[in-house]
Length: 91
Image (cartoon, rainbow, N blue to C red; front, side):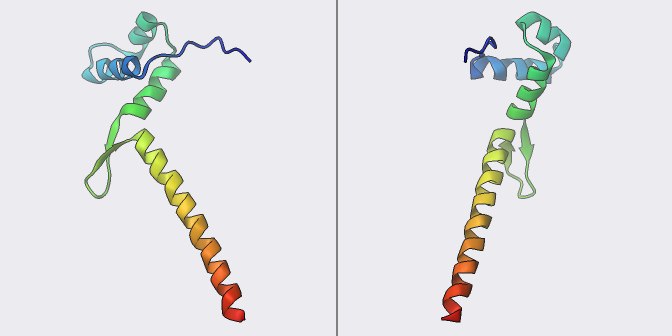
């Protein structure tokens, strides 16, 4: 299946986000200038904007998603181990 969507290099996405964050141009101006949708720009802003955690660390949205995914995996493993322990404790 061929996609007609144009893929933009990560450097281009980051550059557009930086331009927006400096206040030089609006999302609409950037969308017109670079030929991308405002939705894409909004997604890139979310993806490349850093946030501060409760522990004082700064991470970006991509890292946050990876941490959440790892957390879910670890919780699932803990549940499996609890069930296995309960089975072995009965024997």
